[in-house]
Every structure is written in structure tokens, then in C-alpha cells.
Amino acid sequence: MRSRLIAAILLPVFAVSAACGGDDAGSQPRGTGNDTDYLRAVCVGIDRVTDALISATTPEAIAAVIEEFAASMRQIDPPPDLTEYNRQFVAYLEAALKDPTSVVTTPPPLPPDDVRRRLAQLEPQIPECREPTFFSRGLE
Image (tube, rainbow, N blue to C red; front, side, top):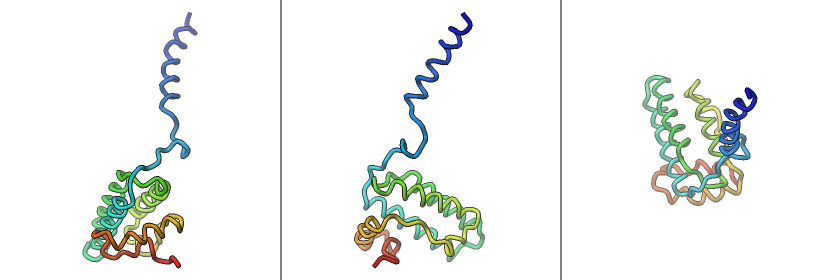
């Protein structure tokens, strides 16, 4: 009787957890966003961080801007082929919170070259991309 009671309690829990799926990278949702919106978010964030590096008077003030950038990138719906890159970029921003000026000395991750070329061609057309070289630098 006791084993039936435990089974009756645990079975629905296992069924619900199995239906929800795991957190491994294979089950992560892929983005459905578009390049224009993604570039706009990246450029706005870069501009704000750049402005903070120039005008902020404390590392904490720079960190606050980096945290806002990371938060906006966590919320964005990236294009499908930028989903993994976006995770890496958010991790880069989060790591920079420990030393906010490291964004000057530590290069950010970059997507694969074919994706970078596509974004680099679009960067100059996005008004928010004041200095449209983030994705094109180092490409030949």
C-alpha cells in the first residue's frame, strides 16, 4: 500500500518534469529574431558602454551600464544562427562585471565569419550603429 501511495505521488511529478524537457544545450530554443533588430540592440548597448567608459567616474557606474546591456541581450530574440553566439556574448558581458574596464582589453566573442560578413554588410544601414565596425573588424 505504501509503495502505491509513493508511486501515485511521484508519477505525476516525473511526468511533468519529462514533459518540460531538460536544460541541456540541445534543448535550448533557437532564436526567431531578425538581423536588423539584433544589430540595433548590439549597437545601442555598445554605444552606452562606450559612453560610460568615457564619462563614468567609477567602475561601479560602468558595471551598471554593462549589466543593462547584458540584460537587454538576455531578453533579445536573436536570429537562429546567432542564438549560441548571443549566449557567449552575454557570458562575456557578465564576466566583465567583475572588472568593467576589461571590455577595453578583452576582445568579445564573435560569430562565425559567414554570419559576421552578413551583419557587417548591414551595420552601416542601421542608424543606431554609429561606428559600424563591430562585426567587420578583422574580416578580410
